[in-house]
Length: 203
Image (cartoon, rainbow, N blue to C red; front, side, top):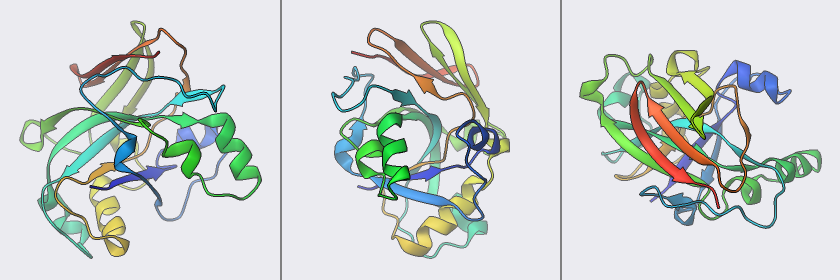
C-alpha cells in the first residue's frame, strides 16, 4: 500500500512556516513502515530535537484508479479519518536550506499515525469537516476542510495523474495552522467534530 501526503494545503499554516501558497498540490510519499495504528505509543527518534505534530484529515481509497477526473473522485473513497503527519522540523529546515529531498524528515518509521475512520455517509459535506487536536487535554490545533487550498476531490484527481491509486492506499490531505512540538509524556487526542479518532502517548 502507498501513503500519499500533501504539503502546504492551508494558507495560514504556510504563513506560520514562512512559505508561500503553492499553485498546484505539493505531493510527497511515505512507505508502509511509516504507519502507526491502533493508538500505539509513538517513540521520539534520536535524530531530531524538534518533532512536530501535523494533524490531518485522511482518505482511505476503496477503488483502483488512474487519471481520475476530479468530478468523479468521490467514487474512490467511502471513509474519512484523522491522522498525524509527524515531522522532524529541525531536520526539515536543514534539508530545505540545502535543497535536498524531505524523505528522512517526513517518511521515517511510525511518522504516519492513522486513527479511526468515519463513513462519508455520516458527513454532510467533505469540504466542511471540523477537526482538532488536544495535547494533555488542551486544544492546540483546529482546522476545517473548507480552508483547504486544494479540495479533497481535486487532490485525488491530481495525485492519480502520476500514480495509480490502489485499494487500501491512504491520502493525508495537509495540516492547518497550529503545528507544534511534542515531548515525552504528551497525550495526543484527535477529533473530527466531537468524535474521538485517536488517543496515544508520546514516549
